[in-house]
Image (cartoon, rainbow, N blue to C red):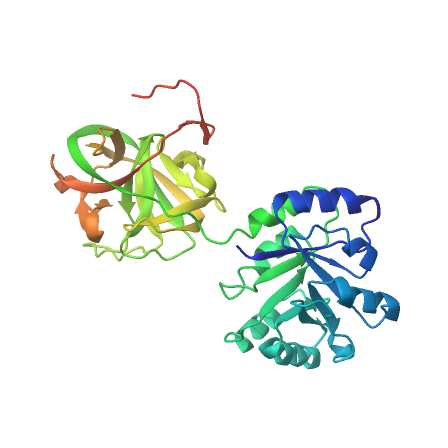
Length: 369
């Protein structure tokens, strides 16, 4: 996960409920210039004392005594040091232009912690420059963000983003959302080898191509299935095709009623996807990543029913476009044109253990066939 810091300065009546929520949902650090408030933070959370040019000296001295991380404005370099054994030191830099950006780059190249605020700059180019200049630095970079949307964008700048973000919430619930945004990566899936048991030409239907905002690898695709309990790994169009160029952003997935797997173990019907929706790209090793849907393209085509069985006897079913150029993936990254499949062939899929209601796992009786 990326690091989550909460700025608890100036929250007034929100102070206590925001801290209570933030502690409960696992916020990593609490930033304050008030030593009395900072002392109330539980010992399993990082107390981040912030010393700025306007901080009174008695408060700064007290912050140095209790802070787990003492962050001091770069203009006060050398004036205050952490007093507690094992406490760390950080530097705060406000970037307002090229000169202060150069200061931030110099500081972040050597400091254990660098807290940076970019003032009045709608562009992420200064952050890009800072990330590029400190790519090999061993310290951690925390960036001040204005709101949750800014946090989501900041964490993906130059793909990797900073090590964490600092947010001052203006409502209860924002700390929870921040932790969700900062959950880095997606889960590893345990794919199964499925044995094809039946194929049938079922006639005309509406199939969905999913065009994403990402390049797929040759052993990647998305999981789709007619039933919530099992899905087949359908290949992206990264493999050569006759008569047309490859479409490395596309998966010719399945019929519109089919489920696909999204982050956080939720399913979505292919027909529900829209520009901006998220799906899981899955490779043949079970590695996953988030991809954003650019659009879906739905057209009427002849359809092919593919039925398969897992080693435990679970039944998996998908209905896809009945055409040679639609492919599913098998063990070792093998690629299978679906019109050449035959009973006994082995392909890859994924078994879900729960039934679904509006995409969420549920524990109740539900039968699909």
